Length: 121
Image (cartoon, rainbow, N blue to C red; front, side, top):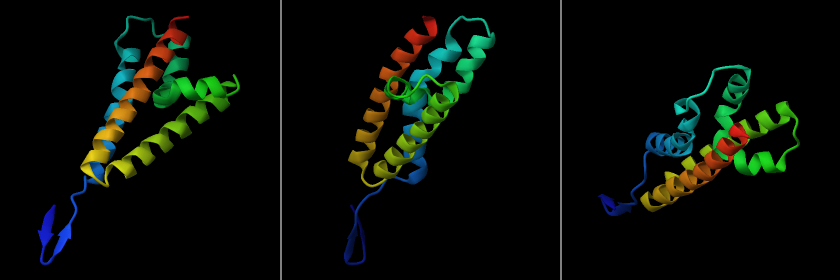
């Protein structure tokens, strides 16, 4: 805690650090997509369109209709909401920052395994 005059100001995590940390935790597990040995054909390009939403692939793909456009927009929107929510919560206290990073990484890792198995199927 920092003191300023007579008031004690609680420590906060800078919003830029919270956003960068949460985005890194969400997207680092998804790098399998770029690191695997695969042809860059139409199937790969289809998955490239889904890439911004891959951190939440597993829960969203299970719950949405198999319509390509609906699934893509659902993935993108849900990823944005998760990233924004975790970033805003994470900036409040350092302990919440680490909890947010852990949750983001766990969600993204589970989704990465699910997306990889669907991609290879």
